[in-house]
Every structure is written in structure tokens, then in C-alpha cells.
Length: 438
Image 1 (cartoon, rainbow, N blue to C red):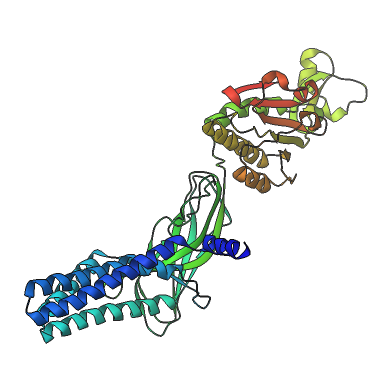
Image 2: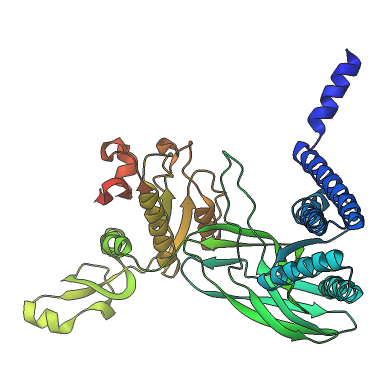
């Protein structure tokens, strides 16, 4: 039983697809070898048609095995000393060249012409030299990508790509390309993975030289954008293959929500500002009102013109200059309450309001599910950049109602807000875009 279970575990651990391709390739090589032996026999018998058919079958079978099986198996081989990965793509020029090699090789085998054999050998040598030269060139190239830590959605920012050639010879026709996106596993949310969406071309890179290229970065939606690898590609010298060296280089950008003035912001802002204006008597510079003189009022505040018109002593009263305190409460709705478009608009509205009041004479604080409580506007914008509809909502009874005015964005029903919170808050109802206040 132990032996049986061990064999079963060993069979489950095998890479079945790789072994299947291995045996298919092995069978193809056996067929190619048998066809080659038959072509030799037909040639000795003087059967020209049989020689041509079997020789062509041998070459075609070997070519199919070489293209379809060997590269796949080579990628499966894990060698610790091999610290780079290469990706090969056959170009149109390379395909034409390969077909020409096969045709000339078949003609050489059928006719036995030594000149054709020499031509085939020279053509195959050109492929070998091209492969070795391009591989050595790519291995001598270092890549670095510099990107900002965060940017705003729908706003452009500059990144920089640097390539350095530490080899003894110049490198030609280099492309820095984004690595191909990997296949998404079923049931797993896909994270945006591409920072570089277009290739950058460097026609020549001298020995021990570094070239820089600026690239414009612009993202339509908020979120975390991460790229774990980049590619350096070349077709030099003969363009038979496009060879790409995969460089493991992880870079990420946090794309903050847009803080541009939107229709929702322009609709909400005047009502919010009117609600939180504090015109109370004090020692400010803005005139609050003119009233009758009371014992104890400073003589310097007497308004003589108004006193003459009213035939009684009148004094000027000024608005108090105090630093307003505002707490922005984002009550993150559960999944399914808002559509994706409504949810993204609510995120943009919260970010725009926070950005607006951060540039005013307002003492800001923030409250949201899972937020760390930092009063820095950047921390709150980063929180909004990464947030998703959550299962946990704020407990309304735990929201402070006396230390600051609350600006609350919620998807709850209008009648579900407790009275103490309602009286100290301006509430923006995200469902139906209905705004209410106390």
C-alpha cells in the first residue's frame, strides 16, 4: 500500500503536459530518423521519387519537433545558474529564411550536390551566429525604470527608463517592452499590471554608455498598478528572431482618485460651505453687524456715522476668526449597494472634497472603515485609491458628534441617521445623489 501511495503521489507531482510533449517529440524524431534511413535506401535503389518524399518527410518532421516541442521543454527546465529568461518570436523574415533553408536542404539531399550542402551550412551558421550575438548583447544590458510613488487619475506624470550597456561592444536596435501579461487564474481578481504600455526604441547604445528616455504615465482609474518584469528585445543582426530578455524588476504606482472639480463637487460645495460658515461675534476683520452701544464696548468700535443717523450710540461688531474643524466621514458601502460607476463617483467626490478643504483654513480629520486615523490628506487619498466595497460599515453610534463638524458621505437610507449625528453633520446620500442637512 505504501509503495502504491508513493507511486500515486509521484504521478500527481509530474508535469503531464511537459511529459506528453516530450514523448510526442521523441516519436517525431523516431519518424524523422526512419524516414531518413528510408531515403538513403531509396537513393541506393535509384528511386528518385521515394527519396524525395522520405527525405522531405524527415526534414519536415524534425522541423515541427524543433519548433513546437523543444522551446516549450526548454522553458520548463529550471537551472539555478541561469539567472535570465529569454522569449523567442519567429519573425516573418525568419520564417521565409527557414523555408528557404528547408527547400535548399531537400534539394541537396535529393541531388547530392556539394555546393547546395555548403550553402545550407552557411545559412544555418548565419542563424547560429545571429542567436549567439543577440544573446550576448542582451546579457550585457542593464535596465532601470523610475516611476513616481503616486499620481492622480487622469493626470499625466513622467517616468524614466534607463538602459546601460556594460559590454565591450555597442548594442543596436534595442526595444524596452512591457512583459506579456500572465493568464488570470479562475476566481482570482486581476490587478492592473502594466505601467509601460508602449515600447521604447534605442537605435544604438555605445559600450559602457547609459541612455535615458522619458515616458508619459497616465491612468484612467484609481488603484495599485504593479509590474513585476520588463523586457529588452532586439532583432539585430539579421531579424530572424525577435529575442526578448525578461528582466525581473518590480515597480508599482498608487493612482490616487481624481481631485478635479466635477459636477457632483460643484453641486455639493456651495451648500456645504454655507452650512459650515461661522459668523459669530469676535475680534476679526469682517463686519458682522452694527448694533446699539452696550456698557463695556470698546470706544474704538463706535461707528460715528451710524450713530449720527440713528441719534444713538452705535458700535461695529466683527466676525470671529476661528479655525474651523471638519471631519470627513466616508461610510464605505457594502458590495452591491452601489453600481460600479456610482461607487467610483462617490470615491472621486470624497477625494475632491478632502482636497478642497485641505487647501482652505480648515482643520481636517478623516474617518472611514479600516482607516488608520491619520490627519494627512495624502494618507486619506491613498486609502481611497485602494478601497473596495466592504462587508464592514461604520457604527454610526461611535462617530463623534461634538469635537468637529462632520461631513458624511453614506449610501444608507435617509431616515437611518441617528439624531445627534444628524444635528452635527452635513450628510451626502450617495444613492440617488440626494443631499440633505440638519
